[in-house]
Length: 476
Image 1 (tube, rainbow, N blue to C red):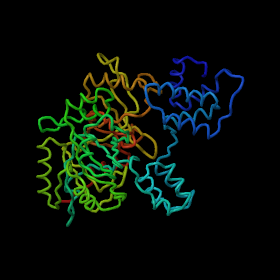
Image 2 (image 1 turned 30 degrees about the horizontal axis):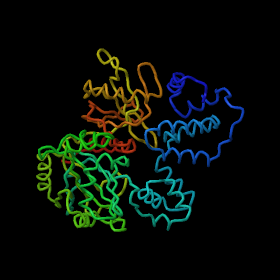
Image 3 (image 1 turned 180 degrees about the vertical axis):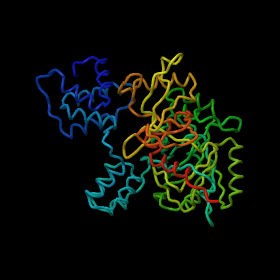
Image 4 (image 1 turned 45 degrees about the vertical axis):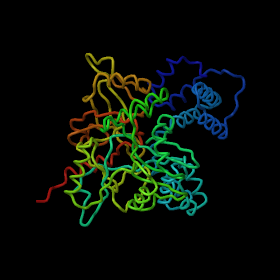
């Protein structure tokens, strides 16, 4: 398309560090390959994107490349820049959901809270902007629709004493070391979605069959699936392998038992339930589901909750979840209504944005990694990590990330961000060495969170909140 070799294109991308900007440069330098060019319209671009989104099967990769080539061949350099950014979902303009929410609210003179609510329900800012054009009543009237998954409600880390207050009672549930899922059923059709909202129905037919038998029609539930052997939960990675599996699914299903655990219901019998209090949603869930509902304790006594927490650990689970009884279900929000209690409380989910080549026996792989938090639509570096990796993990990370390199600088390389690491640490310190203003003391790698999108990584605000909490004065 540009008359350049593949190696030259990769070098250009590494030098520029931004795929859109690299494409813009390449298109501005390309030799004329056709006597005639067709001017692109927005309709052409939209048609191409829709065509790509509908492609499936063994030849889909080749067909997608053909469509992208067609679009870029007719694009001006600047148009190529933004077509590339759209395809990679990477505009690098510092615009997050909050910015879009406020912009839509101002453009159509509607309440930004209604814009945020509609986006939680529909998970599509483009659709929300069309609704906003019709006014606030259209935003208020949005409803969940089966087979249109929404982002899952998230929890903060905390302590039992930090949640309980005078007269406060909470729901206490096991925190599983599994993979989050959303299950939809309507008119006899069942579909299962991962935490990243990818459909995993074909990879988990055994779990889908269990839930189909346990749940009525016209329902959307939230839960977590765990792998079980000899009555004990197996490591989280065993579930992820199943989520990623595309071949020999039946043999994998026979080899390891998967058990779903349901803890919330979002929709039932044509009614959206996310605005109801959690205690009501729980009651509905226990009525409609014959099996697989997670055990629950409702209490306001710290000692009783502590005992339940240790029971969960003894059973092989990660800890417990504390949920306020009056909390509504807020898709994609990491609020204070759900709190997770784990032995390793000091962990963060951070985005891998760069790496440095190793030394000695690790000279052929990446030896340390640059980690970033989300901040106002950007990724801001906060730490590096070099400990906690096995040789096998470093080899896997090199194979996984080598094609994501967008820029090189001496021994450092920088990646197109897509992986999330769970990182343990001993303390958060203020530091001028990182743009985020903080650094992690004794960071250590725990695991790759392949089930998490980078949009679920921790934010700069999370880090600052933890720092303030850890350094606040203790009243004697």
